[in-house]
Image (tube, rainbow, N blue to C red):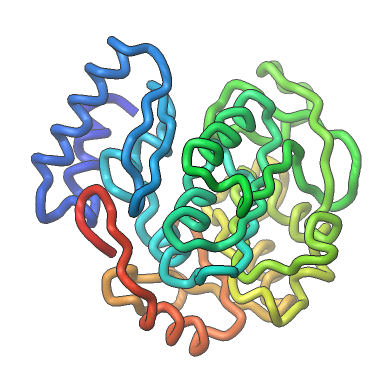
Length: 291
């Protein structure tokens, strides 16, 4: 994404509508500072948390420009989670969702990131925010069964299971299953960001996902599974068999609507229960307001 496209994204972002120039200023200052400092910088995030960010981290820098890079999904996590709840972050990257869940809401979290270099940044963010007691970090992937899978290693937030014959740099990664990770501890909210490997991850979590304790699963439905022969409808059908229906969330009105095409889908078991939970949540401070 070039600079003009980023500025368009920032100025049209729903959390920047009251102060678009301030958001663009954050973008410009970061572009200058990140080139001069050439080292991770701790930027303010939700409530009193911070994120260690480097030049080129598209998702993390989006949080700095816009408060929440993904306002619907992140807003949902902030409103649905409570202190003591368990949040399972599959494909945690550097930990944006984990930090907002554990840091801003006091939830417990299991954060899973398969790429060792990215996992080190996840652990650094957990330590920076003093959340080691509440967050378990696992350097592995998740799939339908335990084993070893090759992952891409140089695509930042887009790292994924490698395709057969792919020429991109790859690494071998140990994989576990959701049911293994959650054998004795069922989460309330699950986030899955695995760039097309979703159905395999879900297949390894059947015992977990049938539990009434799981209230919602936030998952990418942007067509990324087509490279593996999986459609978004395949994902939706699988989730409905577990008892979930697809929704999207308005973090400003705190209401749910039936799913419409978008980048992510929130699959919910009992929408009335979660609607009440989200309506009752206390507001969360962001760098550009509250939500």
